[in-house]
Amino acid sequence: MPCNGCKDLYVAASFLLWQAKMWGLEFGAKSFLPNVPGSTTQTFHEKLYVPDFAWKPGFRLSVGGYLPHDAWDIRASWTIYRDECTSLKKRFQQVLVPPGIGVMPLWQYPFLQISGDNTGNPIRYSNAFGNWKMHLDSIDLELGRSFFPEQSIPMRLLMGAKLTFMRQKYVAEYDGGTTILATLPQGGAPSLFQYVSSQFQLRSHQWGIGPRLGIESRWNMLWGFNLIGNGACSVLCSFFDLHSKFEDIIQPTGQCTMSRSEKFHELTPILEAMLGLDWGTCFCNGLYFGAQIGYEWQYWWAANHARRNYVQTLPGDTIDMRGELQMHGLNAKVLFEY
Image (cartoon, rainbow, N blue to C red; front, side):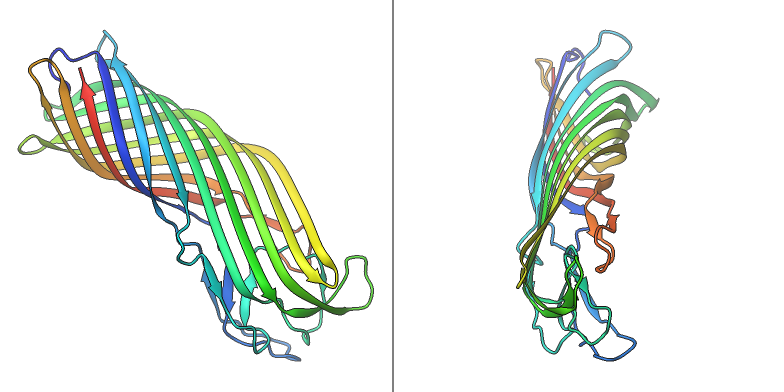
């Protein structure tokens, strides 16, 4: 808590070391059982591959001041965070023999109508690659008030607004494909086509604004240390601008491309929590210095709206992944009040 007389300005800087995880980014599955031509049933044994998410640094700057009435204060915080995948589980390979073994592509548009019988070779690739990048800027505007439910447990109730900007880029690539029996979209007799390579690319731009409520608490311990527990929730009106592109090279057809763009808005709930330790001291000139270290966690609903093709034989029949975003990790903070 601030010293007596230092009730004007609040400045804080936080170093973040977070890991962000986005659900719905599975980009391939290794098939370990061969196809059985002529059989009315097929048995599958697969291993699903998800990108390995990295731990990346971030930064948060907070400034504010105290109002001259009834322990009210105002603050503004800006969080900057960038994340991407590691080199682990980003690329993998698999042999293509016997037929049925290989990489099953999870992000591919059905440019060809696969033959309906069970005598052909299924679509498999020998190499797969998946990569995801995310840029996040978040601004929190708060109006807070301190109170004491117990003398040793100071708390701060806050309300305000949250403004966010998030950009994502996701790429899934496959090459070294099999030869299958299929027909062209315009019809005709089935013939053999070789899948040379396939690529899916998504660019997602999201911005949102909405109310934010929360509470901060400090539980006095020994030797000037305090246990801190903070929590907040927000509901954003989010606006999405999505651009996705499917591009296959199929012989003898050549290059096949399909692009999709969509814009929409929806409500996005966000939960935030932090648990850690706090220590601070006052100097003779009315300056308060404090330091905090703790574990911070954020959970965003439906941040991934990539559309996966639902059935290989039904072009355009897609499913919205609606994957959640989780960010968690270290928050090391220093603050000054005077």
